[in-house]
Length: 147
Image (cartoon, rainbow, N blue to C red; front, side, top):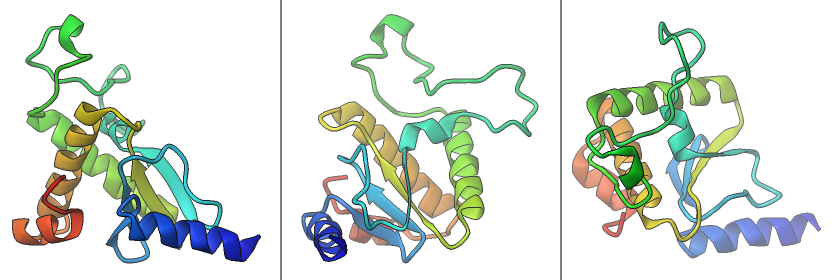
């Protein structure tokens, strides 16, 4: 059973469905809603990290939104993100990684939702550039040009 689970994780990684971004800490799993059983960590939906944490001064919870579109357009509207959303995502991801300790974190998106995947990829790239101080060329190398 354990061997089959390791093979499932290896297969997902070899197919580009589970990319290691920060070794042993952060994975990009854009088409995954759940992680392989042997994954030593947690999979969360990337855009959920755009919500403020309880220690912020925001009065009410904020859901991810593209602020320059009307609410009726959200279903098909995507990017570019406002600076507030980028900063909330970066803060949320940094806090999640810190809380995970020795476990890894995988960022997933809903399968077949191209807009959500695009927004999540841009936010992950922003985190890598702004927080981890990566060069753009390194983001492209790790995530791939399709992201």
